[in-house]
Length: 360
Image (tube, rainbow, N blue to C red):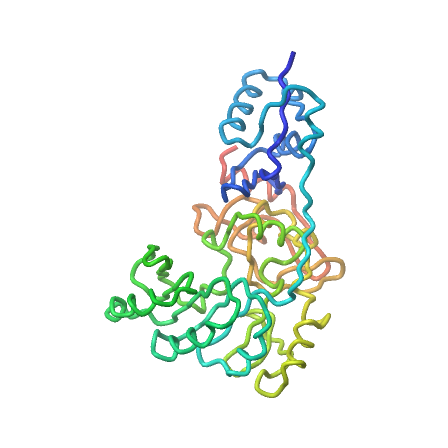
């Protein structure tokens, strides 16, 4: 008699164009699997491993999944009722959960968000100075889970003297420096220090591997919303209220409105439109296995039937390669055309390009 297995409900299979993966939300990790194995595991019922004819392949897959605790054995079919599927719908009581500001932000903004619970607040500054510390201190009374500093100009000679002052700010989660000689990350005084060789202007427009996160909150947000734009507001250096760092559309001037008008803006249908986009309705993104761990900062546009991006991502899901990989090819070079009218794929060209890269 065959053994009976159920899937761990916090290990969720996600399909992509060429391959699939398991998002392990509990361990904040992921594992690639084949599309055939995805079809097998994408069930809340007992898993029918007998669909795999090859006994060796079947045993190898079961051992792999058991070792990672992606599946577990049950004694009888009736036990299935003891492990109901988890709901993937999430309620968001607060429309504003993420804010991006500059170090010289108007004090009015701090008053405007006084009753909000922010999951994170990102502060952009040319360099670390007394004004940055004063701004962080002025936020002490607010309910903010974590503050993220983004420093545009890395000054290696001044870093050591800043460590002590930064370490005293307990709400700081990470400090990110740009223009460093070498990329690295280290933890000190419970603050993550990240060093990037590129400039902030370049970094903020990219979707890169270090911007992919597997966790419970992000997955369920990204499952129904746009993980970058949902709940976010950006106040640029002139006080313009925008959806995100790369957006040009302004919804008002923070220096010329009241708190009530500010909240009317960020709760308006027009402002919330980008945050309510589902990645499954986004061209190219809907074919990407990374879509529920991605905080893509590109500005989407509305096409005839779907949302799409006029600019390409650094990952090509039709070839399963990143821009930094050998033999990378963009969408157009691999036979994929995306425009306001939709997405077309030259299957012959795509297959030829895929075989060139993967040697099949």
